[in-house]
Image (tube, rainbow, N blue to C red):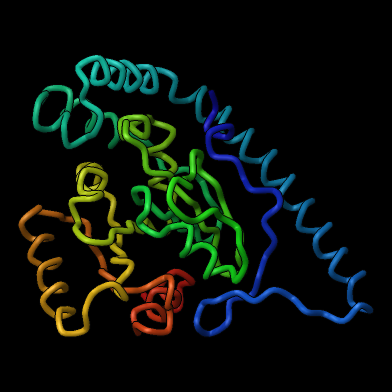
Length: 278
């Protein structure tokens, strides 16, 4: 199966301007502007269709050029699954030879040629990714709440960047393919959302560390932390980063997607995602 099929562009996503707080607003344009809106949407659909065709061609070329490495990685992943090793962390702890083979292949993967600013959100169920997507867009583009979880990678186009929603999976090794690693390498930013502890996604962080990719951590739901305990909690996160030996962390943002204006890191994060803050 091609990566194009695994990572579909969301054709219905509509570009929305982000206001200074990073919160999109739906248009309340007068009726005489409806024709212009329809023209813009039609143009957007045409652009998306063109991107889909380009991505399909890109994936076909990628598969042809990397057939041997893809087969080798697939075998390593299947072997890991047969041993019930469902994450890179589990493989690293139980099969040193397989870990080294995976790292070697991953280092050979070339970045996917994604044009523009592409940002991916990683995180487990209930970390608040869907809420964050909805707040950034100013409209409901992702389901939220208990039991609502993304099952496939989806993209959402904004003016300054393309946001990719990477679903959390119980079998993390499903992402350990040459196609996905090339996709991860082609991203501008890799954002990992957590809530209470870095261990929620430490295995994904260690996989990115192993293949030499940097990433940023967003600690969400800070509004659930008591004001008098905030400093202690931030200190605990920093200590945990050191204890886990995480190497690729660029920045850590402390936010609340439910209440974005409550924490100043929200504005910093949005500027960072859109390239206004390095």
